[in-house]
Image (tube, rainbow, N blue to C red; front, side, top):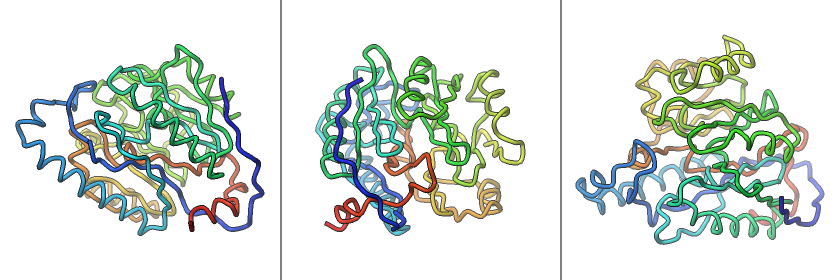
Length: 314
């Protein structure tokens, strides 16, 4: 694996707000199909210009919701002919100021790799990351879309089968020095782990059981106590309720049933619904549109380097 390093920075005692990587949907469209949600003809027949305009408004609303909750946002510059660049969750796995770059399975998305690589090297140059690492040749893995950090259990859950190779799990474990548990996905409608699974900061897990193989379900149940399991209905799963963003007692998602809202509120979360239906046409939602940059394996390391705070202010 090749790594690029930046100088070690001294942490301050200032607690950092969450920080995300996003990309404006200037070129977002459904122009090819690499999952069951994507229908280029339906996109065109429904009025592609109007759909693109709606997507732009919905993305801006998500950006506003996150910043209103105190989140910092770094942006990747949109690139023509890369309509899925907007789904920054797939760019890399990030933990402890290290980014492990994605390698896409489908040729339609492989053009995103050098764009994201440049973006992460730019973050390293600004002192926001220490290392940018490439996967070994021959491995497919699609970033945080298939690798979800569980803060309470201090491990990664990794989706495998449709987009990411099971063999990437030991590479992730070695890179970050934490366990990485591969979960085989069973339903092509839930082709990335973040479409059907989310590890909440409190330790509860949102998941859609029908998206997993029996062995994967057994692994989830072995690590997550019954009281911490939030099973999604088929209707909430189809709304991509698992594809949410959760931090600081807030959960942001495209839509939510009354029953799921009550369940989440009972665990102390404020649920913010901001419609993202345009992106569901491509198989994505809130989590897909964001990449958390500041996850830490050690809670004591949540203070942000003073130079990074200065970079935010600048």
